[in-house]
Amino acid sequence: MNKITSISDVRRHFHNNKTPIYFISATNFNLLGIGDWVGNFRHINYIDCFDGRQKNVFVPKEKFPRDFESIEDINNYLLEHKEVIDFLKSRGGEGTATFLMFDEHTEEVCQQLGLKVAFPPAALRSRMDNKIETVRIGNKVGVPSVPNVLAKVDSYAHLQEVSAELGTQDLVIQSAYGDSGHTTFFVSNEDEYYKYAEEIEAEPEVKIMKRINCRGSAIEACTTRCGTVVGPLMTELVGFKTLTPYKGGWCGNEMFAGAFSQEVRDKAREYTFKFGEALRDEGYRGYFELDFLIDMDTEEVYLGELNPRVTGASSLTNVAAFAHSDVPLFLFHLLEFSDVDFDIDIAEINERWAHPDSIDSWSQLVIKHTDESIDLLTQAPQSGVWKMAADGSIDYDHYSYHPHAAESEEEAFFVRISGVGDFRYEGADLGILITRGRLMDDDFQLNERAKAWIDGIRGQFAGQALQDPVVEEVAVSHAIGGGNFKIL
Image 1 (cartoon, rainbow, N blue to C red):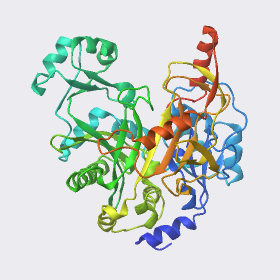
Image 2: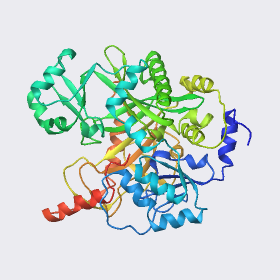
Image 3: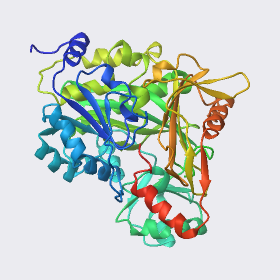
Image 4: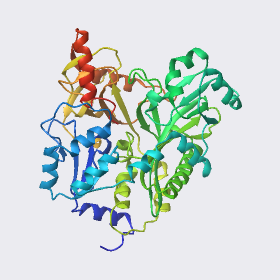
């Protein structure tokens, strides 16, 4: 076809798409609604969040007992499953595969199946995902991190020695890889250090940061041959005990133009564009997300970490007003990995997307089981639209697969992750709630509406307690083996 030069060209191209495109992951949460924009788009998932009601979601009926240690394991299991292979063949065999996470084995299986992986190589993604490497890339292009040192740590005395230049004992230590809820350690004295000493000292190098009074934020972008397309700055919900048992653990986002000053938003966008251009120089292209730490005392904007992939925040990025007035950010990713020639004015898009009127307010809560108890779920809420009454109680309203079906702040779209028959244990993902409007107050604490939604959704789950310690041990093994762990 002719070269793509406009947003209308992008829309038309994907509306008329004939090549099968798949999102293969534990659930379809991250790319909700993308099938409305892309012809022949299908989800291949391990967990059926919609009880078979969503027609562009394929979940194999027969599931064999297997220990999963990662999302990559789940994806590889799916790609090697006979039902999935037969499904791919029924749609022509060849196509394009997208993932939340994948590895070198995934690439090998995709090649055997005739699937093109629409991401940079797994080895490059792994290098970019290294938090230490992120600091170094940012330093190259003038995107600053919180004052830090990078070092191998052998003891608390050694930690004090290598971090002396930071001028404080109040430190935050991160390993190169891993989820922030598990691999970010807050250390201000020797006793706190020894809680995490084994994990810290096992790392060949850690990032040691001065602890600041900060607010977490996230911004998604896509680096293309024409430049880096930058989405809006979102607030991150981190460590709320009613949502997650992990201190420092991500548990949602809030998209609200007024959460930060215009100066902070502009600086974050500038840094994201610079970092995207640096990623392309490193050989990386496509979708990525940056976490920023906003110093609440100075309004300095610091680079936190890079996620070289689609993320849990993608569900908001791709449903906001700017995405629906133009196209979702993910379509630029698909375009970059297509065989189509394009030349689009990225600066014009970025200018339009930066305008406050392009950013309507959305929020999401990732609700985990926070108790130390283990039980077997006997009741779980349906995915779809739920409605809140004036007294804060909630009821199921109707089925939908799209967050936009929640038309007011009295409604919310809920995606169930853990269902009847699953084991509920500390840290298990129960589901994700997406709603219009804010779920935090001006002090960045959960507001009353958020608390009512959390209590209401939790109240829809019920379980049968497990008393036998041996059964509990098997239950935990089965829960993790069934992929019922952090899936975002």
